[in-house]
Image (cartoon, rainbow, N blue to C red; front, side, top):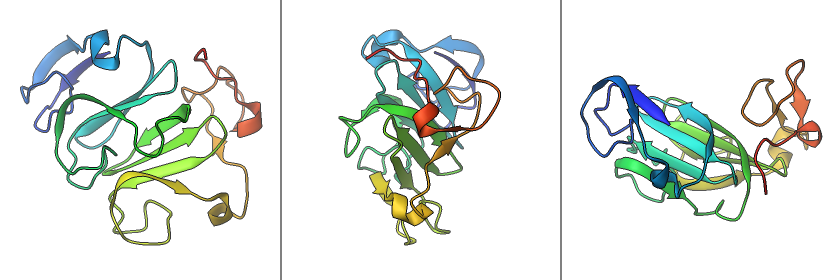
Length: 170
């Protein structure tokens, strides 16, 4: 993983808050020597998925958007394990100050800022840990993932979770 740009909240993951104007390598050891297969960037925070479906997050965390149970900024990649530790994550999206992840089974977890119901949990309570959103909130519909997301090699249509072809190895 190479990161560059603004780094005021540690969103580059290099252990500093120094702005970088050239790509800066984040060592693979920061991800427990696993291959990173997907990267998502939010407003002042970053996250990735490894080949085994683990989530690492770093940067600004004032609304709990990193999902580590705190609201403290993290300057290096931090493994997110609360509530999703044993799940294989195949999709990760970072918003302004909220995060969503989809498991291999098509389950949706959200966390972070929630003042406008961004987390789809029916409340306006911020969440600092991944929170399962029941499929009943979506009328029991299958969660769909856009084409060209990190979860699939297909490129021609929107896929349902039953059509996903994971690019990581178990």
